[in-house]
Image (cartoon, rainbow, N blue to C red; front, side, top):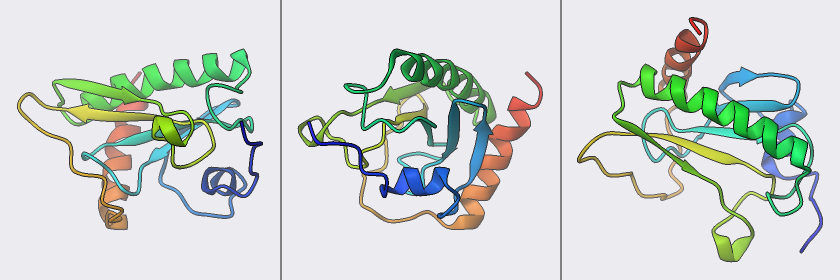
Length: 142
């Protein structure tokens, strides 16, 4: 396994070197909008601790990400009136991982709906802002 690269995009977001549409933050985790969403409301949850993926993450970081993932899954489902939620987590290139900082995808789903393809096209910032606002509004009520 390759070592952690402190210059990956999520490490830069954690350091404030790159912008993000943050929806939730606590001492151990950060959740923000995926800029290439597979559905409206697609959120990423990351640990603040530097770990490449689930395979090298300390148990405490995995637990913290799990707690935040559950919180965001509930909020995203409510905020977007979704019928369900898909949770995805990829490890290493062969497992589909693209950014090598542990992260979990939280994607709202609707009966009969399909996910948009991962084309690399970025969503408009104003749409990401509006979607983040919807999620934060729900989080403020729980």
